[in-house]
Each structure stands twice: as C-alpha cells, then as structure tokens.
Length: 385
Image (cartoon, rainbow, N blue to C red; front, top):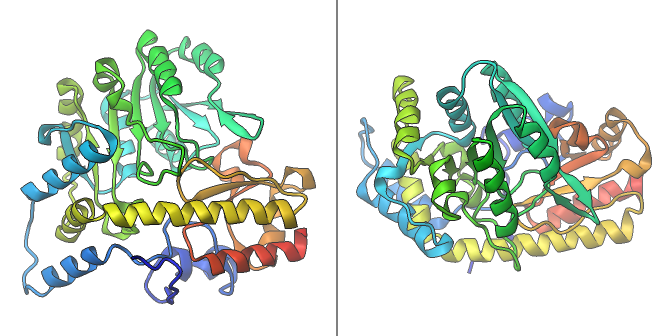
C-alpha cells in the first residue's frame, strides 16, 4: 500500500539531514546516513489534513482537541496495552526539551543523573547544562548483543543517583528491553528511590519477535516513580512539526513537571497538534508496513556487511531505524575512521558522540530507500572491502 522505495529530492527544504552536509562535513555530495529522520513520505492523511487546515486564512492561538487526546489514548491502548487518561498528559514540543524540563523539575543542582552508555548524546548536554552530575553505566556487549550491567548500576545507585534516564528502545544500539530486564531495573530503582525518565520516542518502531513494553505498564510502583515521553516524530517522519507528549500518572510528579512547563510558556503549534492527532488516528497500517520495510533494510545491511566489509561487524537490531556498526578491528582512531568514511562519500554519525564506548563505531540511519542504502554501502566497500 505504501511505497517506501519511492525516491524524491529533499534538497532545499531546509532539512538538516540533506541541506547541512557542506556545513557539517565540508561536502555536498555525501549520502547522509546520520541525523535521525527518514527519507520516506509521511502518512498521506497527515499531508492532506495539514493542507486542508492551511487553506483557512487564520492561524490563531490553539489548544489540543479532544480528538488529539482520544487518538493517542486509543493508539496506546490498542498497540501497547497501556491505559492512559487525558489527565496524565502534558503536551511538549520535543523529547529533548522534555528531558530538560524533567531534570529541572525533579532534581537539584549537583544531583546525580544516570544514563546507560553508549546513548543518545543530547542526554549528556541537558544534564550538564542543568548543572547536574552525569553518571554513566556502560552497556555490556555480550555475544553480539548489548545488555544492561545491573551490578554496575546498583553500585552507582548506592552512591545516591536521583534520576535515571531510560532510552527505550535504545538509541543507538537498537535494544528493545524485555519484561525481565525492565522488572529488574524497576526493582533497583525502587530499592534506591531513583526516579525514571523513560524516553520512548522510538517505541512504534519494533521488529518481528520483539515487543515494546512501556515502562509505566509494569506495575503501580513503576508508574508512580516515572515520567514517560512519546511522540509521532520518528515514526511518521514529522520531527519538524515539534509535537510530543509526557505521560505522568503520579499526581505529585505531574504537578512539579507541569509547573515548570507552564512557567516557561512552551506549547505545540496548531500544525503539530493536528499532525499528532491524525498520525495516531490513521497510521496503524503505515507503521506496520514501515516496520517490515525497516526490518528488511536491517537484514540487508547486516548481510552486506558480513559479505563485503570483513573488518566491520553489525547485527539486526530489535527495533528503531538506527544501526550500530563496529569498526574497532581496523585499529583506527575515531578521527581517522570518520575521515575515511566521509572521504568515501558517506556521512554517518560519529560513534564517539554517544560515549567513550562508541570509539571505533558508527551509527547509520537505515530509514531510507534500499537503493540508497546499497549505494552508501558500496561506497564503504571501496575503502573497507
């Protein structure tokens, strides 16, 4: 029904992924496998709804409609078995913005905030910008699969961690955490009185054999000590519309977070609100087909790397459209690795940005047409094959 192989020119649309290549890498002729938006058309119903709304000649102050809440609540009830009430929700422009507000509202200067590295690098920035203390716990790479090091986390929790940021599914390693892992994590957080901010922005992008489990669905304790962020931005390729949502079931945490959000007078514009509603109301078939296409892309990349790039290793992730490529066997510095890759005509994300565990790694975005993936991999083969 949806043609994810169809290509179109994204240049000159003020999109960072394509229009800032020269600024960021010094060349325009690169294949961008970096920043996390997709090269696919969004859900057609979103385009039609925004076009129709734009025909009205006024764009005044707005608010979330009842349909906005109903579509999101039903989406999560149906797909995630997640019972959400309208009173649990706070609209927010983006998940990084939300993370910053959560840290501001629920911790004090100097408090310890933990992440599992390698991890999405804006987390480092917001923790440091808020003058909190960054604590890292490295994921363990065992038999080609990343696992949480619960023993390391517990030792660091004993030293007074106030907030843990859970990336679920995980960016960049692509793990979809199991019920057993999340239960063990919540037991630790409960034992040491650690609050949880669960970034679930990639939660709709799940591959066969895996299931996303919203952190708050485990039990009342998990729901009561956590804040969850979700958004349609990654799933439907509408990051530029800046429309996300917080889910907070604990009234005391809700009050503290909402007070900060209100104090800074942030909100979502009318096109972001409309796209959010339409995505969750009409997007189920689109997401199902998208996940299958992305899964096949991941399989294609893993097979190509195994057959043509002997010095590199990767794996089919559990979800997301981000893959984690290991070039450590080459013995190159990160600077040398990036220079070689860019020299071959490919612009990935530098793995070292996600923590020291990312040295020797690259993150590539497979949310693109398979022909584009193939061309980029063939360019890598010219230097690493």
